[in-house]
Image 1 (tube, rainbow, N blue to C red):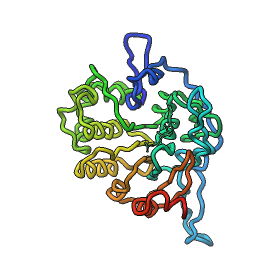
Image 2 (cartoon, helix red, strand yellow):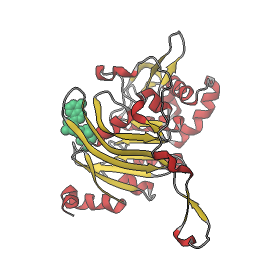
Image 3 (tube, rainbow, N blue to C red):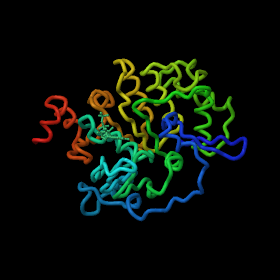
Image 4 (cartoon, helix red, strand yellow):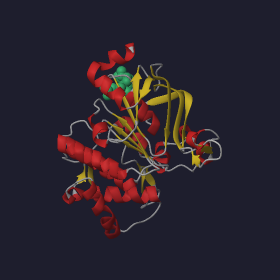
Amino acid sequence: MALAFSSPAPRFAVSPSIPHTSPSNSFLITVPTPHRRRRCLRGGVRAAVAVDSPSAEGGGVPVESPNVLLEVNDLRAVIKDTDKEILKGVNLTINEGEIHTIMGRNGSGKSTFAKVLVGHPDYEVTKGDIVFKGDNLLEMDPEERSHAGLFMSFQSPVEIPGVSNMDFLRMAYNARKKTEISPIEFFHFLLPKLEAVKMDPRFIDRNVNEGFSGGEKKRNEILQLAVLEADLAILDEIDSGLDVDALQDVAKALLGLMTPKNSILMITHYPTLLDLINKPGFVHIMQDGVIKRTGDRSLAKLVEKGGYGEISNA
Ligand SMILES: Nc1ncnc2c1ncn2[C@@H]1O[C@H](COP(=O)(O)OP(=O)(O)OP(=O)(O)O)[C@@H](O)[C@H]1O
């Protein structure tokens, strides 16, 4: 979601979806680097493979296997310049069109995992690899990752004083789509998106998140996602602080954004959003920096009923 300010030269890039107001996030204002993605021979290459479905044995209809969007292998990461290891060997595969949810006790490493995926500078990957759409994500800087189609909504979306939501979204859209859409054209593009996330059009003239309530900020994140049409949306506690109606709106908006091609990785403490989305998906339980269990929504229900102790002992 890097967004490029094209004048005056030189060009600078800033990520709209990654907080950049704290000193530790100042990495996000950078001069764009030459495209240096290296095609990875693992992960996404499964895309073209066609297999026979079990029911089609003996000359039945071939069924395409799902395309791998993200593949994380044995990912280990420490806090930068320390030996404090937070991620201790995370493995995860997300195919196109899938919804994945990560749950886990406070401090188990969920947000760190999400931040490592988008290239947050507070962390250093010490082992493992991440392949996104066939490319080695670890070789990309945060701007390149967002251009490649990764979107992250943070637990606490930042305010950007002096930049209107409209300008911000349009610049982000231009950067992602490598185009120069006019303000009028963009307004027409934006209107149905506003409707989809049930956002009052007056919010687009306000500065990004400035004075927004917690729920309005979360809704604004979904609006960004709708505008940027990311391939993988990483949503860190998008449901926190939302009233019941807003939660329904967010669920509806997310469903409306789903295509057979894009995927969602949600971090949450509660299964309500999953219930509202009401689509099959994967639930992962993170514990002490690794994914300990994977299941379906019933796993989230088990947690809701009995807590994480129940899961650990199962
Ligand atoms: N930049 C950092 N500096 C120091 N400690 C950190 C840093 N980032 C993460 N940690 C520590 O790593 C552990 C995992 O944190 P993380 O935010 O990933 O947990 P979480 O599972 O998302 O928790 P929660 O459910 O409370 O949001 C915590 O103990 C946290 O204090």
